Image 1 (tube, helix red, strand yellow):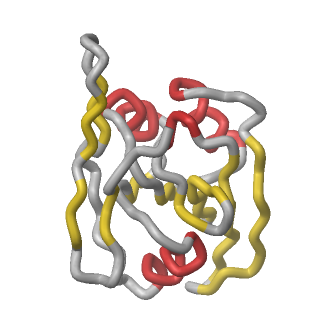
Image 2 (cartoon, one colour):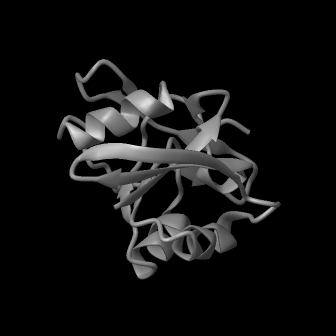
Amino acid sequence: MKIAVTYENGQVFQHFGHTEQFKVYNVENGAVTASAVEPTNGSGHGALAGFLKGLGVDTLICGGIGGGAIAALGEAGITLYGGVSGDADAAVEALLAGNLARNVEPTCHHHDHGHHECHSHDHGHGHTCGGHCGG
């Protein structure tokens, strides 16, 4: 299993389409065996699902994410855990322990008239989901 996390300074980055790097974790027998930070090299919203698929990623943990990106990840066969915030390593450990709630609903909504709205909610696992999308 390969898990990618939108990543910035040790934290889950809060806007999937603007992430400049992913931390990718190799997992065997329920434990992380290796991890590396992978730069996106400027890939944006639409290209990121293909970028992750090319790395062999099958699971993504991220903060805010829109409906188009969710659809692209689904087409790429990547399982999504969206709306997550906090420490990236802790989020992966929570997933492996079965304690990370799977949220596949869009947490970022962009409107043509310039408004940007993100939803935040608490899953009761010591972290909130979303809160802001970053920028």
